[in-house]
Length: 87
Image (cartoon, rainbow, N blue to C red):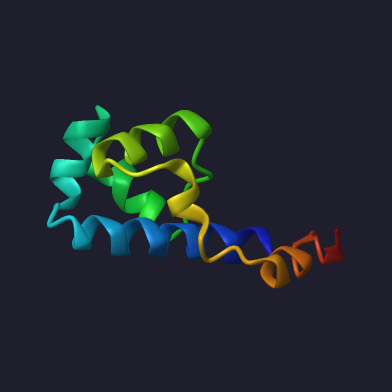
């Protein structure tokens, strides 16, 4: 899994959770104190999201941070690569 794939996987998970919570991108952005474009970039995997933003997302969803990473199984973590090299 490349950096880009990991960001897209995390973004999809955030988008799925947002929809499960019945929130719009605008509502999540407001809860985080950021723009809707910022949320859209996170969900598309176009933004390398910092820890603080992830914590704000979890606060908005009322979920623990680990819930964002359920798709990052041990097998997926073993496939992490950086610049084409396996970590």
